[in-house]
Image (cartoon, rainbow, N blue to C red; front, side, top):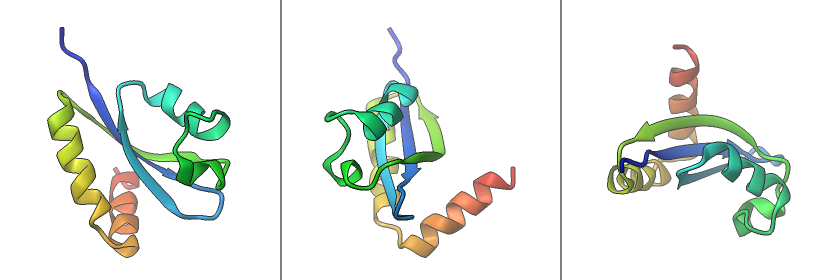
Length: 87
């Protein structure tokens, strides 16, 4: 069985960005907005809005991409978002 993993970035109400991975993108964004299962970081910054996602064929690839994005500066993350929104 092949399960896809998604790397995602949400923009919080305070304009900060949160990056994570999940197998169910819609459920995870909903959790960030309305559940105790959302990340502690986003619970106090609701609502969040999905601004980026990318599908990977396994958890390892998604986690490596998440690590690379988390190391980027805010400016670099915004540039990534601008580039993907132009497509």
